[in-house]
Length: 79
Image 1: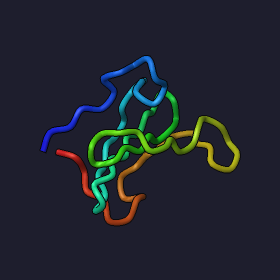
Image 2: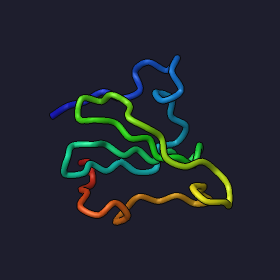
Image 3: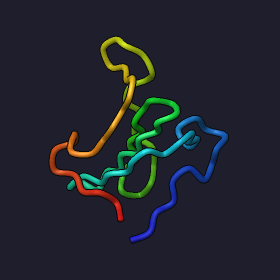
């Protein structure tokens, strides 16, 4: 299946800096790691933004060198 994400960059959830990784979980949610913004953006199976996780920093819920691979349980890489 094909999906478009980020086509409407006037909304912050549709803006990407540097995409570092993309995973899809068993429910069809898409997790996009933005390495530049140090956050994970979560989209539903239709490509609609659900939420963003994290930000750059050293405290709780913050990332210094974010990575997705193997961190979301039963997720599969997007090919």
